[in-house]
Length: 141
Image (cartoon, rainbow, N blue to C red; front, side):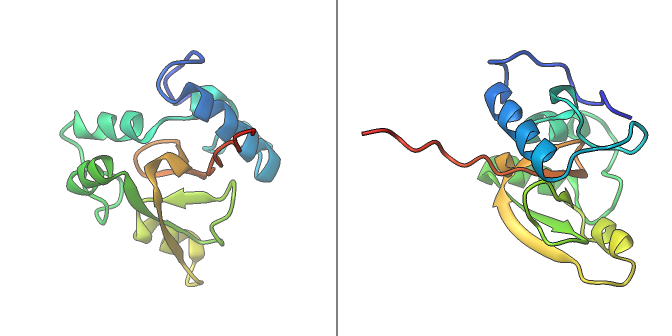
């Protein structure tokens, strides 16, 4: 169900980061169908601010109760967030803000966790995204 994210133009909030994150995702874990939730284009990528704002502006809670609006506000304030996955957390891996969601996907297997910058996730919504850490460019001498 692509296209869930807001359409953006290069230079808008996170625009160049989104371009680089899309490249990482296409290289490491591209979507090969059009019916699962995932990132296929820049239109599917949200910044943490964009993803969490939709939840913070509504009276709804996150899908899983172990990541709350207060957690989202704290992440936006500190710039850090704990993410979980049923797979090793590497470039392109699907991650969640909810340990419960990762446990559901793991089916009794191992749940991996890592604290990262909120900018290291290409967010699909407030509950999930794909890990895509954009490395800083090396400065030329």
